[in-house]
Image 1 (tube, rainbow, N blue to C red):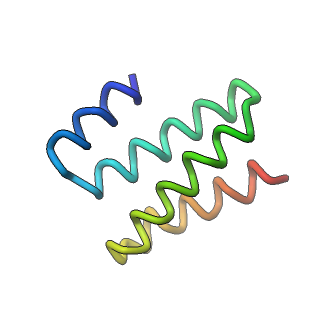
Image 2 (image 1 turned 30 degrees about the horizontal axis):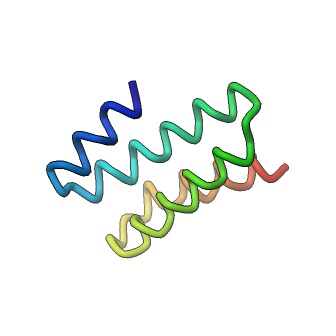
Length: 70
């Protein structure tokens, strides 16, 4: 589901939504135990959200990264 949402946010050129979709994909991957792929999605999300100066989502991504690395 997040992959479909991600494709739409990219087509619509909506970086804020794209960052949130990447975060969602990472969260799902953590639940499946695929931490390496989750980290890649989180890093992509972090790169986007840092450029947007969205501290709320940035905090969520940084937290998720910490959990995945732990």
